[in-house]
Image 1 (cartoon, rainbow, N blue to C red):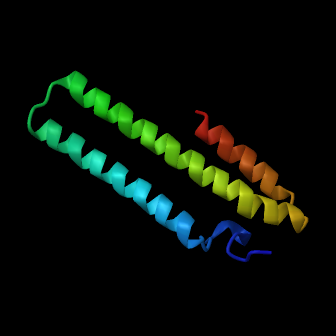
Image 2: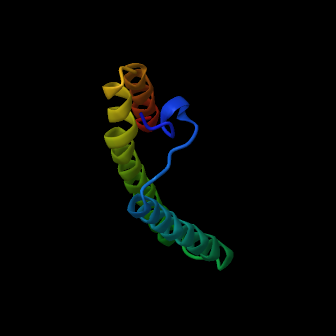
Length: 99
């Protein structure tokens, strides 16, 4: 069992997964800075709203990638090792994401 997944404290990510997640977060961070600048420069509200919508889409995409990685690593490993409580945790996560 991957001890990094056990107890839900840490997870050692493969280099490719790590780079992908960090790149996505860097792009989102840049988008948020861009919206801040738009507000500071008194940009037109609909233009700001469109950019915020793009940020929401980017965050949803980030969540999908992270959830997919979690299901294919931590969840699979836990189930293979007899820890079926991970299914309840996954169900709770999905409920929170679908609010």
